[in-house]
Image 1 (tube, one colour):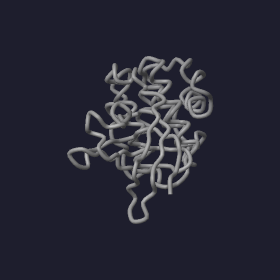
Image 2 (cartoon, one colour):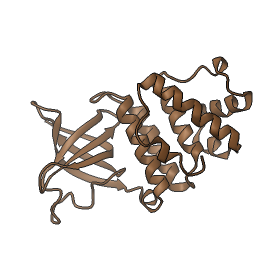
Image 3 (tube, one colour):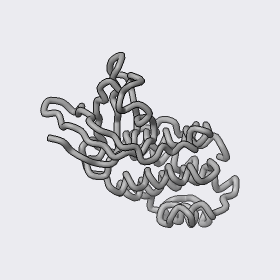
Length: 215
């Protein structure tokens, strides 16, 4: 049975000398893994179409015996190339992928999470890397997961709570117009550090690097 969807590449890893395993985030199937047979060959029809954070339309044959499905065709839509020219943006994108992998189940439709990651990657491509972009992603994803903090019950200063609420609820343009002080950046970084560990069991990998620039 052939399935058709759109996805963002979260991870890739070699399977054999010629094949790759591609981990995708899709809106209708959630997180799935596919085998791209022969993808490491220069003459492969997949050549140049499968890399981290690429957005593509693709089809796959669903496996009846495992959670690795057979990738059939890929139509590349967006490479998010600007992310690769800035190490901080790459670290932020990698952290977002790690967060999603840790906080979501496989084979579960995730249309809002997919849209959130797509908007985040587009935002990284357009804007300078900044801590508040990461905070906005964290808070928006926590909101979608039903884990948004109860701000009235926290000890954060009123101004920081207000900023956190805007980052969680407003669109990306509104979030990026905010001007955080150094103290507010530190307060949010430390608060969310503890909050994520408490609710997820451990911190998603790469957060320190994602916040190294401007945090």
